[in-house]
Structures are given as C-alpha cells and as structure tokens.
Length: 439
Image (cartoon, rainbow, N blue to C red; front, side, top):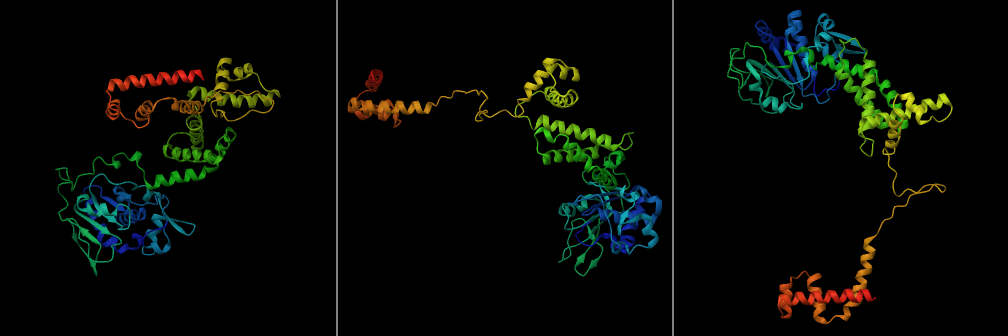
C-alpha cells in the first residue's frame, strides 16, 4: 500500500508514551473513540498500540478512518514499519504474507471506514490527506475536553496555531501533539450536555451489523477478485445480442461489486449463486433499459429474449426452424404473445429510412415533399410579374413585406391615408393572383 509519508506505526514510542495512556484512562469509564484522517494504516497503528498496552480488554476501542483517496481495503506493512514493535507483540497482531505483514482480523474488524458522528478522544491527521484542512480547523469541536490531536506530518514552518487547543511538544519549530483543555468532561458542540464520560450516541457503531469496516471491505474485495471469471463468462452469454462485449463485461463487473456489498455471509447461500442471479438480472436490465431504440414494456422485452433463446434451442432439437405454435408451447404462452414479442423485436434496432433493400427485395418508398423547391418557383414567378405594377404599388409591397414597415408609415411616405394604403395593397395582390393564374 502506497503512503504519503512514513506510517504512524514507526513511531511506536510516541504512541505508547503520549497517546495511549489517556485512552486507557478513558477506557476505564467508557469506550474510547479515535479518528484517523489520512490513512487506514494510522488507525491500525493506534489500535495495535492500545491492544498491546491493555490486551484483550481493548476490544471496546472505537476507531474511525477517513480521508484516504485510494480507498484500498488491504493494508500491508513492511518489516521496516514494524521493527519498532517487540517481536511477541508483532506476531500477536499481524500475519506474514508474501514478504508483507497483514493486520489480523481482530484489528481490522474495529477500523470503521467513515467519519465519526460524535466527539472523539484522539484525532490523528495527515496534513496532506483529503479533508485534513477541515479536520484541523474543527479539531477543537471534534475533540472531547482532555482529548488529543496528533499532526503526523506537520508542514515545515512555524508552529501551527489551532484554536482551542494547546501545544504539548515542540520539535524545533514543528509542533505535533495538541490537547484540548479540560478535565475530561464538558459540553459537546451544539448539544448543551456533558460528553466527557458519555457514549458516542447515534453513531454507526450503535449498529455493528452494518458497519463498513476495513475487514469487511477486504472480504468484499476478495469475493470480487475470486469471481471475475464468473462475471465475464456471464457477460459472454449475451455477446450475440448485438451489444459490444466490453460494455457487457463492464455491466457484469459492476453488478459483481454491488453483489459483494449486498451479500450476507450469515445466510445459507454461496456467494457464486447470489452473484450469478445479481449479474444476470443486471445484464437483462441493461438490455431492457439501455439498448432498445423504442420504449417497449418490460414483459414484452423479456418474452422477446425468451423467444430468441427458444428458437435456437428448438432449432437444434428439430433440425429446422420452429413454428410460432411450437415456440408458444415450449414457453407456455399464447401464439399471439409470441407474435407480439417478435414484432417488438423489430423495435430493438429500427431500420433507417435511408437503407435500401437487396435487389430481389421489394422496398417501401415513403414520399417526401420538398416545399422549399415549390417556394423558389413561386418567388421567381412573382418576380416576373412585378414590372407590370406601377411604381407606387411596387413601393408598397417592398415597404410592407421586405422592409417591415407598418401601413401608417407607408401612408406618411407616399402622402395618402392608411385606409388608402390598405385598399391599394388589396388591389395589388388581387392583380398578382390574377396574372399568376393566367400564366
């Protein structure tokens, strides 16, 4: 797993000497809550440190991880990351795989991949992580009184000043650990009630059966990776239906990911069976909703696909093309339903009006009238008649139909009344119509 900056696990002494003791004091009264912004590996480091300091009693620790843009579920460590941990403690919390060290499920089960909904006792932030600025700006509000904030990779420069927090240590000009003043009790932000010793109410940990933990995300990734061939094989079943195979595989793989999220391992059903039904359903919905050029009822679409499969199956059995009655009998539907489905199939890819049939195929010509051509002829005919009008009549037509003038404006220009302009216009148009009919 690629990281920005050294993992927090390398600072074992800082964890054990500065950060873990306040958490152990909190654990005597209630479950402690930790929020790591930047890497899931940082949340694992805090969990391991508390485990080793307190043993099995640390199972009440609540750890949230967010701000990791990679979003990976498999967090691994190199030996250089863990060499600060005593060998016996290391073997209790990690297992070795392909020269990497994998956290045990007892650790990853407690790392929740989300933001906490209430105040926390420890906040660790990587300044380069997504959301780090908001976490630092609101750090005092997110911490319980007496809680601590660890800036894992402080930027070079002056000691940062965080409102409402007091710096506890300095490394030259770099400050890393801050504490919110208070005895461990106080009013939560915007609640008007003490939060120091109370539980984090309303958070996702109140319903542990629906947590998106690092462990469960790893299980989902393992399921997806183990069933990629199944998804692609199911997509190839529909490759002859006119859709590109790449698009079908994309639909199938997305359905596989969704199936891994909905799968409940406690139910007595294999994931392959559950995923197959989910992928086939998603592929059929893709054909129903995305590929039909015209809107056809879902029942007719599904029957059309069944008719296609039945025609192929019966064709192999009978050695000839099956009749409508044989298809209807095979599917257990009426002949009219089969005919409707076959007719609806023509709506899947409607033929273009520009496509001509073969030489021996009778095509259907659809007459199209080009009105613009007729208008061009009329314009030329009228233009040939204009010289027969007197200059005043031609001026009236020009002003009214080409210049956009009103009859009142035309009347003022030629020195007559508006009523007279109207009469002249009617007479002029009547003359043009008469001359046009004559020829």
